[in-house]
Length: 182
Picture 1 (cartoon, helix red, strand yellow):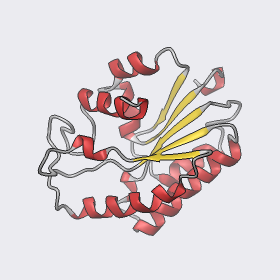
Picture 2 (cartoon, rainbow, N blue to C red; picture 1 turned 135 degrees about the horizontal axis):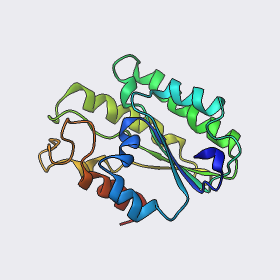
Picture 3 (cartoon, rainbow, N blue to C red; picture 1 turned 180 degrees about the horizontal axis):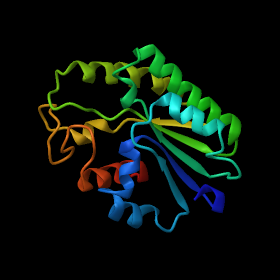
Picture 4 (cartoon, rainbow, N blue to C red; picture 1 turned 120 degrees about the vertical axis):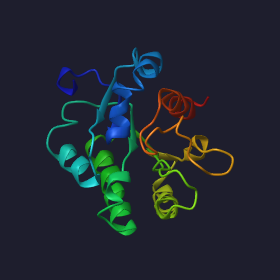
């Protein structure tokens, strides 16, 4: 799709981003179908995979107005928080270098795991606190709306994320509403 050009908006990430083509398809069509949007999410991707793709032609020949980036959850099993932050930082820097006219909307890593006290939740919170510092109000903007997916008690409902990681159709609407300003 990138080789066709005319990419005004790109989404970069893992299977959660790729899910715009599955559970999120109807919402994608509604919000992004007429906006020359391209989904560059690939299941299983970690920060290092995204960096490789950015270096090997994935964004070659395009100059989108905006890039939405949500990556890092797949790194939680193999990398330290510091390594994940470094990977996300490198992605943002690479996008700024290769696509200098593109505004980057960096999303906080979405919550995962059913229970609020799951150790991954604390790690995600710490990582999000660090990557929020990448915002510069010029080329990089940060938002974290993960709390919109949670129940009042902090748990993650199956209706939002059936496997406590991937989004339901309604959760993709929550995502679109959050980045489009409700």
